[in-house]
Length: 193
Image (cartoon, rainbow, N blue to C red; front, side, top):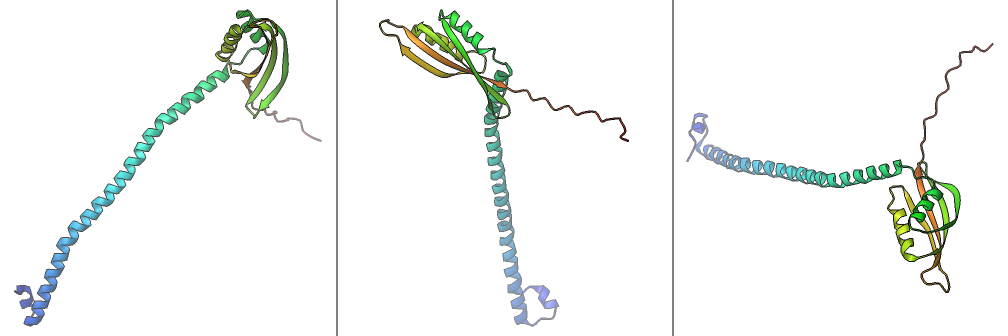
């Protein structure tokens, strides 16, 4: 079988057969190349879509974590926004609510923590205290809305007296320092001689 187009070009029968076979081979390759190329294009786009889909799912899953972090940061900012009162008075008031007697209190010097926070510390002593009022006193301190924490607790049993203890409690309050921007001095209008 010879294609009639080759007869018009003036080719001999052998050249016509070779040209016909070459055209058939090229046509077959073209018929196979189109689907293979389209398949490669589709699989490449499918891989790109899968990468985009996985990136979107990781972003969506990270949104919950970011929201949680922002909520924690906002709650901490809110908590530190409310400055703790003077610790000695606060502790005395909390102890008297539990019928505990504060014998003395000692304020320690302020300790800076970085550029944003300052720790105030007060140590109080309680004499002849029971365990139940002490527990509710410590719980009231920890559950207060102020940024305070127990930093020291020393309990000594009083001999000869049931449920009677001498207690040393250290409480720290953390305050956020307010740093105001330095006011710039107005330019001098005086002329130098």
